[in-house]
Length: 228
Image (cartoon, rainbow, N blue to C red; front, side, top):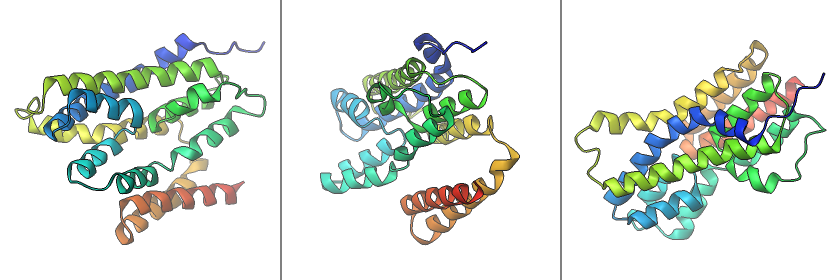
């Protein structure tokens, strides 16, 4: 008997771990935005339109320092090019029969964490469902935007009394993504992960963080293709 496809509400429920991670980080972004001189409306617009997680903190630094908009835009695009690979990777795991009719409505939500959660659900035998993907992405997106608004309304000095908390929030996004991926880790994937990790470290040390991420992606993709 074929298992039913997960619904929109199943996707919303699956987004709860991401929501719990996004809310405090988005709150700190809202606080940082107002501290940098942006209004609550501008902070809200940055999260609603860019929706780039940790990259938005870099956007704040670039824009508040007077960097040209085009340079800021291209820098953020380079940092987030990895997202272009998430859709094809997810559909490869979903199989040839998976529908992409409404991909325009859920593909925008494929952040690192949403991708990790979706990939994990497929690895555990769940069928691919566009309704599920929309619910999963919408829950994460709403949490990020609402957290930003709450932080912006709290003001730039909201976290000054807790500097350790403010510093620790910067590690929550990569920690959440790592936890989601570790849940589906298998021994077969270790060589590919090792190659990607080495490529990232080498690129970061020699060329910089953004180039290191791109080099690690390329090295991991080539290693994965070589193993097939």
